[in-house]
Length: 196
Image (tube, rainbow, N blue to C red; front, side):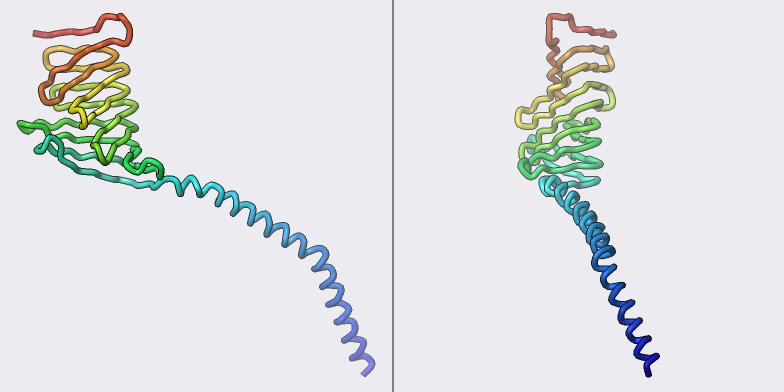
């Protein structure tokens, strides 16, 4: 019986030593690891308010009518809406298709852009290309203003059309009539070639 008491005492002393070691050495290490994980989670949570400030979409399409009888579509691979500007859609790889009278179709694309869901105004930025099949427009910026029935094209503008081409800083263009007003930001002459 004495041996059984000795074994029990040795086991109890071993468990006691293990608990003391665990309390003073392993527990602080485990707590430190847990705090590091919590800090990482809190850093992620700190980044979340930005995500709360915007809503992100992929492969979106808006359709509408302007001038009572002309339809259009606005497409984008990626887009986001900021919480403080709910009517403005910020787009990546923006593509607008305008269906004009007499069956003409105008395609406008750019790498970035904004679309106003209320006014239907579109603002294209970076590597803008617009065409109706005959006329081709290249620029850095193009503002399609449905509220003013006007297209402002500016910054390194080049227009190629069947009877010529031109380069300018800024052009106000009417897709319907194909008339344009050309201007430069300074006193430079407009570069234009007309073919007969």
